[in-house]
Length: 421
Image 1: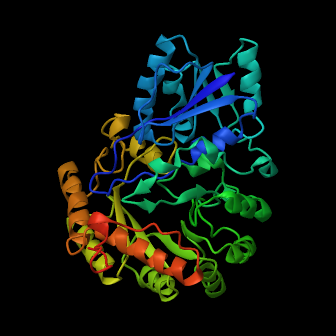
Image 2: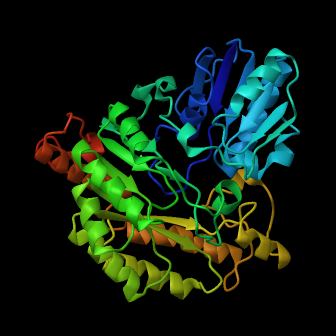
Image 3: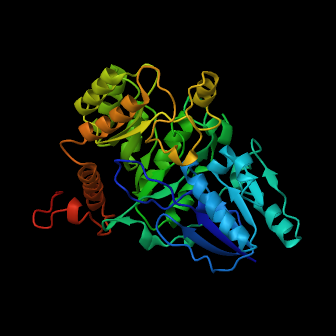
């Protein structure tokens, strides 16, 4: 039996430097497929799909809402060829009723220990319409190393620089942030993988640069400390979402190779200022993630917020517009207030206003989104800032002997001076 896995393309965030990371969902899904199944994989963001390739099943791994319309389009093409299609992934779970109109089957939930049921049903010509494992989470001991062998590694470089590999050490999130669908998808309980299993997976990755895509590493202090201690001997350089703002944990993170973290910046408080400073004091970079369009935001507030970001010396900033994705608390609120403008999912990118703001017009918020990007990067382009971040990690790698020779080039690196340009 042969399965083709497809990761569809999607419109990239306006103003953001375009680069492509090895996708995480498909390689985790592939690891749940029995070894005797032949696999073929296409990441449409970096390669063309060969529609003439034959298969017994086409599986769409879909992460983003703005990715799902393209997945539906591709699915119809395969179904027109008589090849059955199944959908899985985050966006499938958020849009499964619509997706059923374009698929032979949908798989809801986490695949480990469950996808053999689908394989058996295909072999028996009895594919079900819905495989529903939402809120029925697998034993975490079933989650091993992702199947990265399906990737063409050469496609995931940016200007000659080796991009990060994505790994998760836990699932679920005990927090319930208003713009986030994680409670619906992965539950409110923090579910940690065995640290030995995480370390074993990292040892198999021939890449010194890692991105922990966990919703938050700051959910269990004891586990977080044990993870960072276990990372120290590997000498990997890694990125993550928030880590605990605690002296011992921050010191361990720095020793364990923390390169930079994503830090939500939701106001201009001393709390945020202190948090960023404490990370940077330890040599940990900070990329601010900033949502624009909250109900207390007007144009003057956004201008002050951007000034604050420049003042606290963030290394990078990523601005998005508040987007009411399905199954999030904010969508329920905006639906109740009749403030959602449309459900054109291709435009739910985080770069376009799709709801009525409270203190601005739609056009004003869109204008302030571009203002934020352009003002923050007015003195130094995002390309340049990214190059500086990679230069820092190269310096760390050279210091501990793990540098493998990749470096920014052309617009990111000046060969004459050896400095970013």
